[in-house]
Image 1 (cartoon, rainbow, N blue to C red):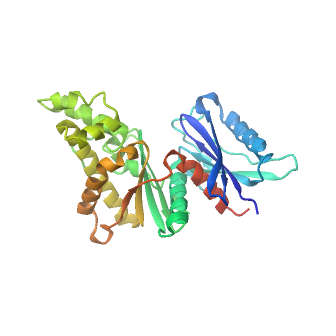
Image 2: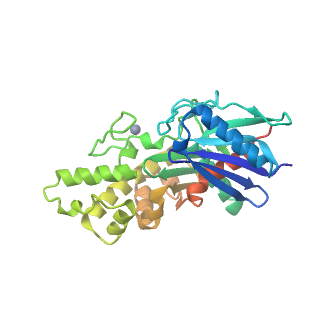
Image 3: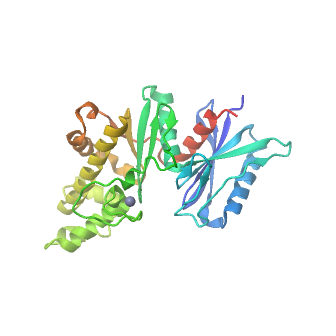
Length: 316
Ligand SMILES: [Zn+2]
């Protein structure tokens, strides 16, 4: 039985690698390479092969690699056709052979889905209590992964869980990068917070409450709101109300055991968790009102853990 999994998490800034020891349930190796150093999808394929071969001399690795990619993966073709933040934009993985002719298979999965699978599998080992989960990752944008009964929900062509593009009625109608107007991500993300601040600064007769916020970081913004700063409180209230409605809607659709909030904004989770839970309760259907909303536990390692756990689940 081979108990070492080799996982990869491709991001816009870095390509993270990790080796999970299944018995210890921990990453025993972690390393990364700047994404900008890789110029083509052929170079990426070569990098994966080289790193795998190098570490296969030190660990008896499973003969499969799972790679998390920041785009929708077609579950039939195992290809990703749109990688918006990556220079080579598309990737079709090729299986390869080792010196002894054993084949190594490469499987792609969306990174938000793998992060959700990582959180789910880790929690299952720790608490044994949940059968389904929604992970909402809020950073520059808003990503989401859905797990039901041990399985990742991908949808027919890989677009399930695009919560960031759910339309929540609002007064602002900011343009989203998907081309639509008023998507959740245009309010509930780091960029969304900027959108609200700029909107209030430009439209309010007395803009003095918002001027200070224009150059503040997300963490500072949540801190100011917590201290009662009127402008920051208004911005964060809009964020919380919109997110609370979206989470209530998703619960009416898939009724998860738990909702987790991850990503950079989750670092401020304690500053907004009570209000978020209250808003969620106001908008959620009676039977799902008590769905817990908690902070994700694996932080930036969720993707790598997810890739390795998923790899361990595959029987070749
Ligand atoms: Zn959108």
